[in-house]
Amino acid sequence: MRQGLVIAQREWAAQFRTPIGWCLMAAFGAMSAYLFFQMFEPGRPVAQMFSYTTTRLMQLMIFLVPAVTMRLMSEEYRGGTIESLLTAPVRDSEVIIGKWLGAFAALGLMIALAYLALAPLVLGFANQPTGPGQVLSGLIGLLLLGAVFTAIGLFASTLTQNQIIAWLLGVVLIALPTFVADYLYNAPWMSNQIRGVIGYIDLTQTVSRFGRGWFEPAALIYCVSLTALFLFLSKAGLGGWRQG
Image (tube, rainbow, N blue to C red; front, side, top):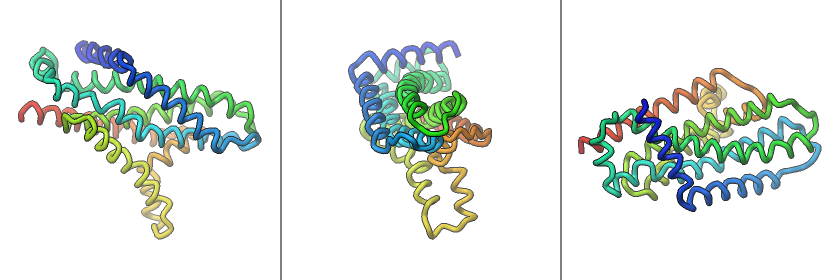
C-alpha cells in the first residue's frame, strides 16, 4: 500500500502541475456559480435550494470528472511509461488505488471549494435557516458521487490510450446511473414498482436526498459498492493490458 500512496501523491501533483488542472477548477467554479444563480431567489426554502445546488453540481461533475481521469492510464499507455510502471515492484491493485486516490483528492478539493462557496448564499438568503448538518450532508453526498465517478472514469481510462475516447467513455458510463436512470425514473409510462427500483439506482435522486439533509446508510453503501466495483474493473482492465 505504500507504493499506492506514492502513486497517489504523484497523481495529486500532476493534476496541478499543468494549466489544465487549474483551468478545470476555474471552469467548475464558474459554471457552478452560473447554474446556481440561474435559479437563485431569496426566500426559497433552504432544503429546495440545497437540493438544487447539489443536483446541478453533480450534473457538472458528469463532464468534469472524466476530464480529470481521462489521462490516468491513457497517458501511461500512450507515453510508453506503462512498461516501467508494470515492471516496478508494485501490484496492479496499488497502481489502481494510487491513481484513483490522487485523482479523487484533486476532485474533492474542487467540489469542496465550489460547494462551500455557494453554501453561505443559501444559508443567508433562504427561508427556514438550517444548521451545519444539512451543509455537511450535501457535501458528503457530492464527495461520495465524486468517488464513484472517479472510479468509473479510471476504468474508462484503462480501456484506451486515446484520452478523448477515455473522456467520452467516462461520460457515457457515468450518464447511465444519472441522466438515463433519472429519465426513466420520471417517465410517465414507468410503473410504480420499477420506478421504486430505479429510485435506488438513480444517483440524481441520491444526491438530491443528500442535499435535503437526508443521510441514508443505504445510499452510502450503494456508492461505496459502485466505487469498489469499478476499481475492480479497472484492475481487470489494467491486467488485460498487461497480458495483451
